[in-house]
Image 1 (cartoon, one colour):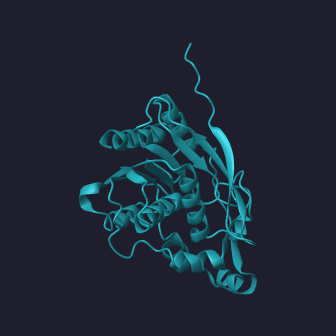
Image 2: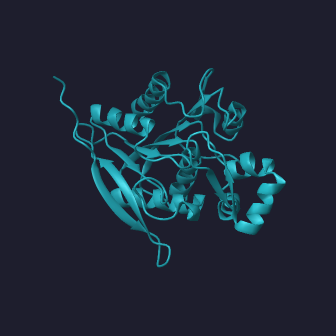
Length: 268
């Protein structure tokens, strides 16, 4: 009988100064037999949490190989505190940095899904800017949506949505993935402009593997092609999944995600 891996360790940290403090939930799996290997870090998408299918599969992959794995929920998501409507890219990036600084892994592979792909790219930039000792061994970006506020939302706003942003500070949109509507705030859109990455060469200084479904209704596959143009050619791999949707959570999609992670681990 195969022995089941131990569950990850639960912990919480507090991020933000007075009036901005929020409690961030973390699931940390310390490495066992591969303490010298990179730690896998999950960066979830908009309104997703750290217990989703892809995040859990990443954790199980790490457990079976003796690697470390880190998952956490942004504020306003999952088990973390804070209001979702207060969320911005800068705020969630601050939380990702705080989690890494708290756990201090030596080397990481960032696995970012949808908006998490944007957070991953900004995290790579910010770690480099700060001269962090954390080594980036690679990025796996799943249906990545960098700059989505400026590129995929704002150009398509209706007059009603624009009025709602002015009058209420947010607008709502029917969600394909939840009975609750998506909420996009004026603060999120304005902050997004301060975090744009598709403005020049994105120097990750590590290999990047992108997985993109060609039937994705939320992030068109041509958007992944655009992202590749901003990455160093020798370090970027794009896998297009002809029948893949935005979630990429089917068994065959998970297999591709884990294969990409394994390639980066072996490369490191």
